[in-house]
Image 1 (cartoon, each protein chain N blue to C red):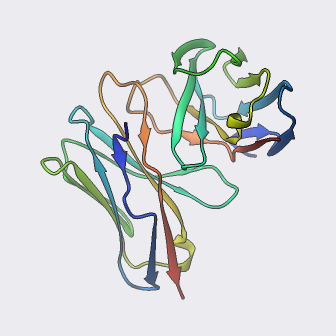
Image 2: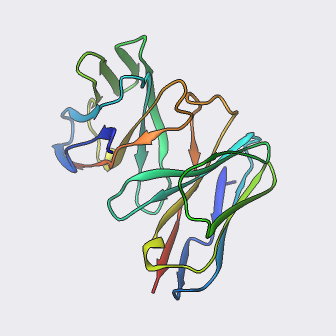
Length: 115
Length: 112
């Protein structure tokens, strides 16, 4: 069983479309994250949820909206996709909201290509 | 603002030799550091960590060294194996930052 699973693995879409990426963790962790790896290979945090509550919201466009229906799931919805949104998006989870000292467990990533 | 830097994008090492991957940081508030390993089409996986109260941490073939005065850490892999071929990310955090800052990674290739 995959600890942190995200779907789809690949997503190719046209500019202006709306798309969602789903993430589920079966580790019993309280905190989940979305990270973006851009073309320069930087892995940057976008959002963090602890027990369904948003605790980190980096300077991400409003077109990106995370939703956590329960603490095992954190989905990412993106409206009006732009070329610059093309990247690999990683979901991650950690045991608790220990702030800076929790080990992250990552999903395998979603390669988003906006044409 | 690149607070965590991995200046070597790639490194090739012969099997059995030592691999040394370097990471520099600029924020003196960072006090916890991790190394992640990433294979193609997979997510990063945790490898080893070190807190600023230590200057060395070992786990099997992997050792991380921290030089706080130089704001530098390094990952040593001894002996290197072909299965170690992957991208290695350094990450740093500190009290009050509430997030990890990642470097851009170093691609290690271990030649058989």
